[in-house]
Image (cartoon, rainbow, N blue to C red; front, side, top):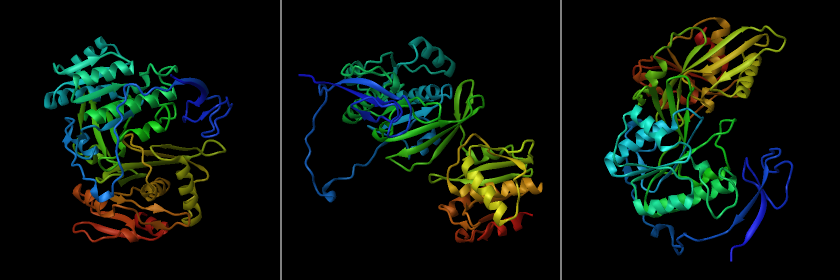
Length: 444
């Protein structure tokens, strides 16, 4: 007999409580507890009994990679998609998630067989209209407008497609739950059961995830734990460039990115992201080149700083693609350790290309770009990276040699790096520094 249970679930983080609370004790969100009823049922699930064995007795399964049709996206995924892999693609509305996946489906259906595209947000006629614009017309691309999870799983077992796309997971609902689509319980249950069936049938699946106003994935955090790969689709909606970044990947390195250009016929991949981001650089005061890497391949980015006389009592500190709290620390270090004062200036920092940089290796680049703007003196073609400590010391970072080789490949002749990262490379003069004052002396 089915047992019904009522509880209250936080719609921000997924915390559950037997009674209503005004504020979630887990994430601190106010008025986020919603009553939900769940009917626990194991119907349709396959129970596979396993026994524990020593680690050396488990055989390593060699992953067979399937191409998405985009070379750069395959690289970001670690070489392609693996059978049974569950991928979550998240991005703001209108950024191009459905466009990208429709193009992936086109190439996938031609290479590996039928693809099932489950649409919960758009009607088939809307998808057909976009497909016509993108010149997507594969007969093996099956569109299924359905939001009921049980119907989708049944169709999945009958059709056995080579790829499943669900747009989006927040629109699905299971008949075993009484809560509405998009609730924490529904998102968690639908994702888990889809993942379970797709791994059983060795079918890779793309799940489209919505984002909230803070720019992070909507729904419970457990959603990101269930899936194998989390991809963020970034970029300005009204600009023509897009960046797909792998922030989690169980089948490859995380942090790799693929850069696309939005055109009237869809997305075109950019083979050389470094050249793309630096193609319009003019080298004015405040402009610094930083080799960014979170995965295995560095990408050269331009970091810009602008300082002007403050118009108000409290100077402004604005950033785009960089943590404003980190900027406040860097400005404090510059004032105390290098006597570069910005207390009466507005400071603006921008990472060109719409890329968000979180690694501490960008600290030195931001600091020297601010100094360059304050002194009104161009830095020139210098490659700069390093973490900045609160005492002004410049600390070592990872992948130093790979960053320098990427700069050398694009014609850079000089680089300012932490002393612990200084290496000898033919054709590149590497200047090692231990303190922020030493770095400033090289540019002024």
